[in-house]
Length: 436
Image (cartoon, rainbow, N blue to C red):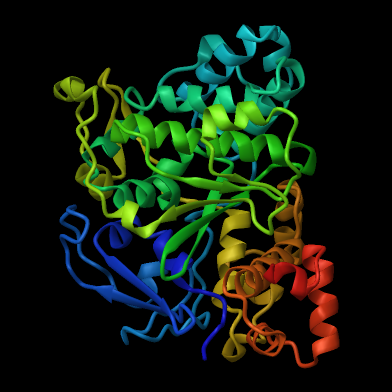
């Protein structure tokens, strides 16, 4: 029984957007069996692109074997940092629509515009549709919105406001998606769309026989800002899916926090399928829902004004807005997300000796520089490794309900007492509590 950490995520949201857009992934585990098969159907998602093989698929120093049931994920060469946002001050976020939406929500809730922009390095009169912001700038703006705007529903309003801009932004290409699975794949896994919709959030994807679970992972977000950011991300996904699909798709949500006092705000913006005090913060969707075809959007009469298609975005990494403004889409990973994937890829026993020095070499930087860059993001290699290990434990115990012996073996822990202590330290709960 192979229960090593799933490699699907490293493929499904890989750096190589064209490869992902043209492939169909089948995930089995043998308990959902951790394996991936790639169908070399260039039209699998209707985008006319072919699947690249081996290291090109990840473009991050890992090899993918062509055997449909086996992934070899050893680090094989130095990929460099060209496809990685090494600094939180690098400008990669297509921020015009995001800033405009944030200002509109915050000002309607009593915030002062000058105070909202103070310390962000954002100047409203200089904002253009092709303006780029850094992760640090955008995160600072959301901190100001959270502290100054009044009301427990500000995060949900913010998510909805971000989504309301979709037709004018590069996201308008998503109106060509044919079903819910394709829409969610593009929206939550593709880097090109991440930087103009959910720049601080990347979703890790798990699945079993019946459903898919999307677990948010954040970049440049402090612990004080985390719950607010989760609410923004979830509300944005709901509103975007509803707007683009022209109907509400059944999604359920789980939160690690206790049931909030403003539960009515959650129900209004996310729906009634809510769970609290759970192991994961997550979005869940049943697989039968994923296969449902999407209706034409209510705004489809505007399509003649749009100059972009999904195929064009995939092939050229560039788009034009409805107003005809040319925008270069950013096909890059944030440094923390790259580290997470590196840890995922090197977490099997064959690559147990792969560590921080090898990661620095993969990025063509010194160990000291990499430590400094991660600190700039407010994190560390150890923290990211523990996050990976925590998700692995939660996947095995909470989602698949495996025994302690099986989970310990899959996580590479030799004795059960140490396994129980590790799980308790990482999750705050015992293995038995996680299986409930």
